[in-house]
Image (cartoon, rainbow, N blue to C red):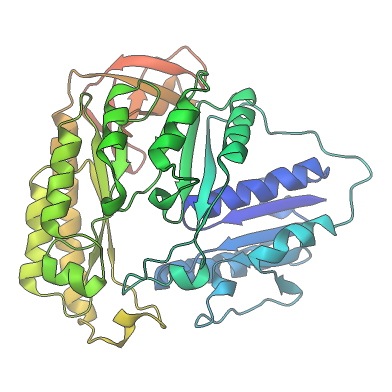
Length: 407
């Protein structure tokens, strides 16, 4: 059977979709990349914001319209959210995440198995933890991904070695609340050390880490080990203590700034990216300006700013909301400040040496990311994808829709 897997949302969703694709391939099915070729669609939805809900619904409608004869399975986080209705096209089915593996096992096996396409991937995610119990005031994730679970270290090491054997050059450790991984008194840093000790020509990158869970040991390791990526994603969300308290975040702005100083003190330069919510209920002008000043301080390589989205069932949903006009005005301003700050950050890297993992080669130019998560374009490239290349960073350039550097 030809199956198309469509994924929306976070790296955890991406990882789970990849697991689905791998299971289907092992069963002999063909995972295709063209909508019109598919006999079965699996749409892995996201519900973290209203925009995510909208995109998920759009994708469901689009695939049903493009190939009405194919079966359609809706799974992921939207079906887990009791406050989010799902419009099911005719002939479609909703399958909860916990039931998806069993559903796929029940699919009729093809008479002629498809050839495997699992070899030679450049980057893969490795899920080490799932679930979150932080209950930030705006977040629906503890409802749709409840129950914090750390996967066994032995299984993680085994999966990591398998990825290396497949030729993967970068493994991204991911989780719903990654920094909470623990087993028998060991924490995330212990796990990373164990993975690095396995060796191999592979780079390890960490997914998003809550600021209160980043240890000095982890930063020391990141600053010292050449195969550990020098990039941390530290969600900020709000830049004023009054706002962070209303969000039920587990740190103060002073804590966050101190963490950024600890990052800056590492032996190797470590780039920081972050998330910022704009227009949170009752957000004052002073609270918004605090975020603007922090971005202008040049701390971040990049900032993912997004407008606050009401999630029914959360504390913030019952609070007085800002006017959409004001939120749009603030978003427009913050996006402009972010772009200027990123350009300045990139310009400060001119002349630095870095290692780029080549992901694509088009029209003689290679594109990939450095250990610090800077997108780089290498012109007149004569090599192949899935290799590390030492470069000297040049000037800022738009690589697709994203600012990066030439080499």
